[in-house]
Image (tube, rainbow over all chains, first blue to last red; front, side, top):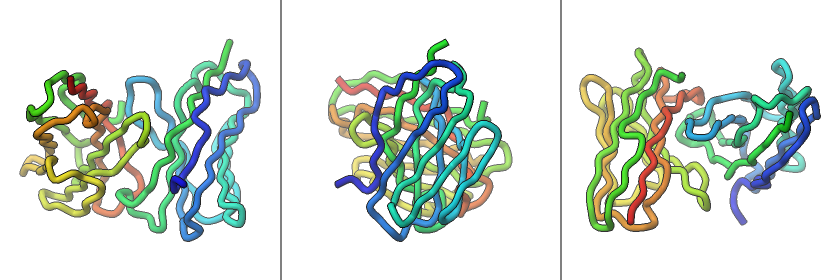
Length: 112
Length: 113
């Protein structure tokens, strides 16, 4: 079993839909969670950063962490074609960038 | 644009060869990280340098090495290349040695034939 798992997709949704992207993990000690967006032929860019359990909202994006289920989610409201990208989750025991374990990514396509 | 630059964008080489990938961090960032991204393994941390010194090591093979120069740019050297080394190699930078907030470059796509 991999330490962090994501459905690779592709996930195709119509413009304006609510998108739910998910990761499951095996290490219950993970405390720090991030979501990255990676456009084709580009490097990942940090979208959301959360500590421990709970929700965090930033514009159309909401990150949710359920440590009891070892499950994190990223919700995108009113999805746009410009949201089409691969979304990577990452998590760590501590706050140090080099210790984050990345999921393989979910490819999202938002159709106009 | 993250401010991190990487060269070259693409590299095609043969098995057994050696290549050097180059990275310039964002202005003011002292820390440089190298990652390998392949389809089956996802994004894997290789090594981190901070202000010229090796700071942390991840899943880096002995055939791979890196260094950070006084002007803070970094190079990743890959030798005795194998087909399985074909991947995207990303460099990221951050302000200090222990920051979750990393800025990634556009990557170098390496193809080993």
